[in-house]
Image 1 (cartoon, one colour):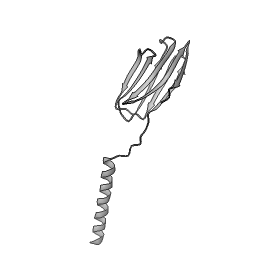
Image 2: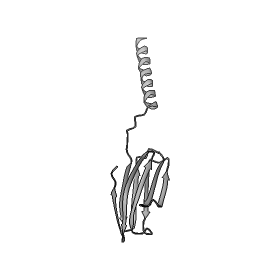
Image 3: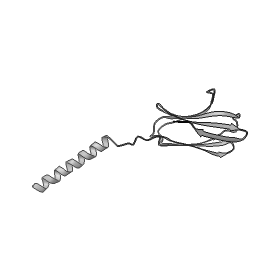
Length: 122
């Protein structure tokens, strides 16, 4: 009888522990990984990870705010895109990723077949 009672008590504790962790999962306060890479003279690769399946917007705009590319990502943890910049005029552009109140920006400069990019302080 004593062993049965000990076994039942252990089983109840295990069930309670599982219930507590299942209802309150531990999720690290993770930041989006946002990487850009020049693939050739006219193509910029964009890679996002750790989106937590939250609505995320990716935009390429010029410094006057005119939009050249926009995509909304939902229900995905990652995103990969190759942006063809061949038709863009030489100039400075912003690649902006928005998720909720957070925003990440890369400056992209197109200059006579050359693509340069840099991270803006986040």
